[in-house]
Length: 259
Image (cartoon, rainbow, N blue to C red):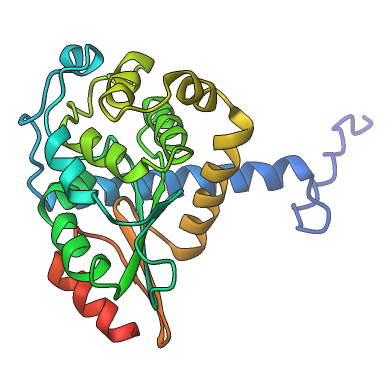
């Protein structure tokens, strides 16, 4: 009797990099990106837990939207007389640049802004030792992106530092989506900004999108794990601070190291 068993098909060639499809390559990149986002989220969580935010002392979201904010007089006095141009505070000729990367909805950023930033401004910026740059890095979802748009709109009227400070004083629970146009306009109104221009700039994607994209590139290049993060640059080099909320003393020591 003839052998009727079928000859098994030849084994498939193993996948090689040279013969692989672009689809597989993008799949690998996508998985790596997801892992990076998860890792960043863990670092952000722990950086936030390392501080004790001063939340709960500001006005409610409803009051902010109605223009009933806390801290307006205090903030105006803090920045009075200090040169401010766009996202830069202080003497543009100062030898050292302190650049902060922060999310307006981040509790750890609030902690730095309320507990340490005033001393940094008094000791280092007002004295001319350093100038301060504030760059918004929205990492806590779409609500943070809207908050960033509002901050960048205030930046166009040279009121970014007052805006971020009042925001942090009146910051709400990060688990709520409170960053509405009404909330933003409440702060803008308290600062006396031109609301028509502010609202137009807030909605101008060509204005805020390149700024946010550039910050994301810097964050990736510097390996930031979360907010707030700092890059301090001077005649003797550059130092990066991240992973936990730095004190005013830490900032001052770093400024001295690069001066």
